[in-house]
Amino acid sequence: MNKYNIKKVFENAVEQINEFAKHHKEEHFYAFAIDSGMLCLSSEEGFHKIIEKYSRNWKESNEKEKLREHLLDDEIEIIEDEYEFYKKSAIGKNQLDSNKITNLEEYIEYWLKIENKVREKNLRKGNPYVDEERIEAIKYNTGDWPYQGFGNLNFESDETKEETLNYQSYRECIDKLLELFDKNKDVVFPQLKRTPDFKIIKTRHDY
Image (tube, helix red, strand yellow):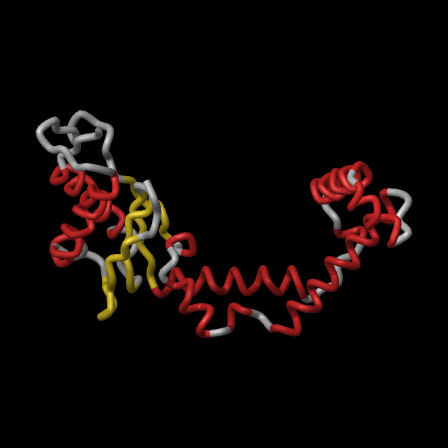
């Protein structure tokens, strides 16, 4: 069972947050989290850039018809592997036969038709990254944050280990740390501009 000096782990994390804050003085931060040992922060400005990127990528992926010349080498390789797999399975062979597919090029054309139908369906639904509900749904998902992993909890150095402290699991350790962050917001984040609804987020992972 791992044993950690929570106070030293906390102090090390605070040092990393202070260093991060020096380079992000103009942003307005709305949440902090610990995700798989990573220190994570998100600002309104940074998240807005993420949403703009997602929206731009969605448009590029859906608004134009995908043609044979648009396929990348790795895409063709995946399609080829899929075609070979279909040829060897009874269900896959039936699908090939029912669509009168006899070679790889015919299968690529078939694949493109399916891909473009998916794009048409997506276009009918509309760009999800202009929808306020969708944006709000991912706003507190650390995987969509601009500063996921700007620092890491230091559990391994001799400085942070202490045999007299025995926390039952990594989760209990994280819970204790989050409690310290929540109780000491003004001490931990004094250099960051925080929104009025600034939150300390508990991520949902099993350890």
